[in-house]
Length: 477
Ligand code: ADP
Ligand code: MG
Image: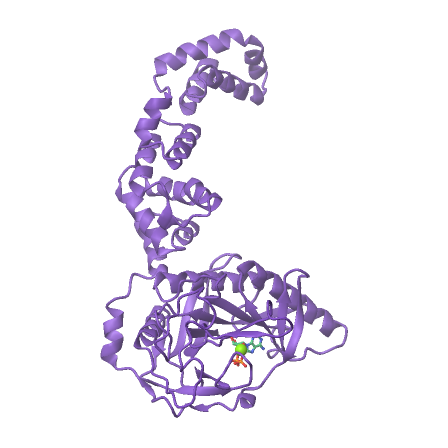
């Protein structure tokens, strides 16, 4: 019998504000411990939180980007628990009335087609501090620099049906929060982290009991952790056991999830409205003001790339992974050197590979869209073969100048003079009588060998399409 996998993701995106959500302390990463912890972040007696307006605006941006309702009135609540890195003894979060409600996000599934995940809510909350267990001789240190950093917790409905889809959704969300400028998306620094809720059931049955895997900070680990957890639950149930609702941690070294604690229920946290903070009121005019600053969204751009430039869904998706990448593509097309499809092939092929190899973001790309356009022009007009173009591209990447200058300096012009090629073909045919005979006897491979000979005689500079055509004509094929 079949099992159906059910996944809901909770994502913590650190909002890109300069100061914290309830204090004026800096949110910059990497400062010496406790140098960015104000009296509010340390929970000294008598202090009061003051809401950071910039964090609210970023939450509104997100709400608009996922077609959600931005609540005209939302409420901050205290989530009570004890932990050394939480000096107040509670986290300020939103519970019953979150600022963003009921949106959705579409993503391109690796299994094919576009899928949509419902986003139940996104709420504002503060991050906790950090416990440091090294360098303290058997004791733990507490760094409160991160305490009070603004987070947006984005919660999906349990709509995802496999690890690969969960990762595709998370990647799309990651691209979106960067695209709209609300989060830097730096996963190593913890700016974007996901918890995966996983359960299994027989198709059509009610939802199974879920386990929550905490703090997945890489897409690869997310996929591995979910795959492991699904296998664990299926084996457990098939062996007659039952899944216990709990919080688990993924250990990438051993590729397994381990129980961390039994899952608290909401009632364990004794949520109640924070009496130190007024309800958050957002007027329609505030929302419109934010709406006026929204960029064209990735989804719209994906669709436009298909309708306006005739790209495939796959190419359109690859090119809209980041706003800078989509901008680069449009600049490349506007350079007017080549068809959009050739532009897309080069950007998602050669250029993407070189960026990856050198660990660069497209914003730091050493070859500008205008410069790449110059190279594509020479492919489109037949000056360069594909192979030569790759050589020129590498030279451009290394800083040797514009495509035309490199072609000139290296003598890389493709031979497209049909008279010259005819002469070469005649010579090759005369010198390779055996291949000619084999070809006439029906051996297809012999033809390729003849093409190879001509290409060799020109050091690869002959236009291969022309060589093919002339050879075929001469052989009467
Ligand atoms: P909590 O706040 O305790 O983590 P929620 O009810 O808010 O619990 O759910 C958190 C996440 O778990 C949501 O993303 C939701 O879609 C997902 N979820 C809920 N039930 C299941 C289930 N049976 N299987 C998988 N995911 C689930
Ligand atoms: Mg949770």
